[in-house]
Image 1 (tube, rainbow, N blue to C red):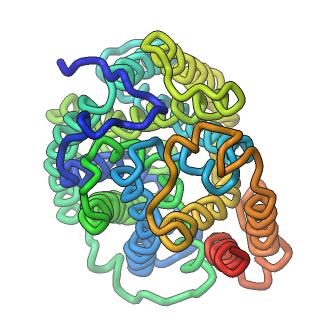
Image 2 (cartoon, rainbow, N blue to C red):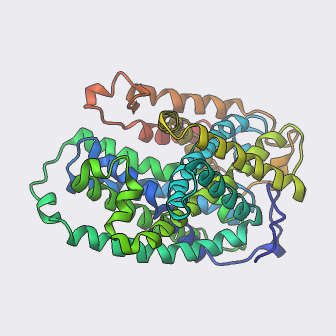
Image 3 (cartoon, rainbow, N blue to C red):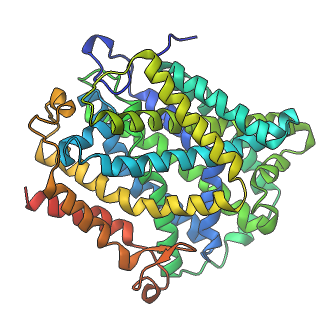
Length: 445
């Protein structure tokens, strides 16, 4: 068992840097090759897109959304600090609290949903009551997050290997057990559902932006941006595209047998003899990203609260306390909201994405273009330093980036912008949320 991690929101010293960026491939492949990815892929067919075009949208959406995601990963080795600490360079030490609060809500929501799906698999294995299984799953997640970075990466290798074996087998069973050729024939293209499916899949990758440097910050500082980018990009795009395509085809073939019964359907593909191994694989597959949720969540909470105290280091006890607090809140949300509330909450989290894309655009433009990969790292912890308490210009641009998306937004059941119906329900808000703030931030610097 690796030693318990002692670092948290503080910079990683050069002597503690280690590893190779290829570990990022395994970690992000495993984080994407799981049941929630398959459910997201099913949504591309649910919105009315032909299955053949759904697969195209899945591949293209992940390829596009994976670019900013992997660019965030490359920031980790250069700075050695968690992802959201970097936001202080753009928004100010206090100003960065605004996107941080939204990120914390995202972490809690995704952690809660992961606990529900993982808890279902644990309940199937142990015959525990579902609420007890959810709590057990959340507790195991917290243990791995407490041990920290090294164990998370080692588990990523294990989960990646298991995911490949399981999804190869399930994909073969799906294809050989059904007439997939007939399903994909006669494909007719419709632009609005294609754009909506593209948005859903690109958004999946964009939500990893606040996580990803957390998992690369221990790499040596001389690790090239290119290496970090491509190892992360390859793992996240390949894993997500594969799992989502599986989900799209499964839903197109099975319909109601898949929707609402995703875990049972996936396990059923293997037959009774393989029920237990497949339940284990579902639980472990979801476990990787669940650990990342609580790991990134505790650092985001700590970053928010320490902005006003000026602290740059957490004690071991404090670090464990933050992890446990995030795990307890996430488990409570899962237990209390595993019915309609949780589904509505996840829709709300998709709505939050409109607030995260402008943050991503500003962060990447500032790091790569304005400051050319160099920050005064100690100043990120000093409200009286060069980055200041509030950066009004960045906050205004951020607000513009949110507002420009509203007319084009389309989150069914939550909000539909007035221009979205004119486009047949197509959602291009995320593109504007990336492009407009990036351009404004550059030209006003």
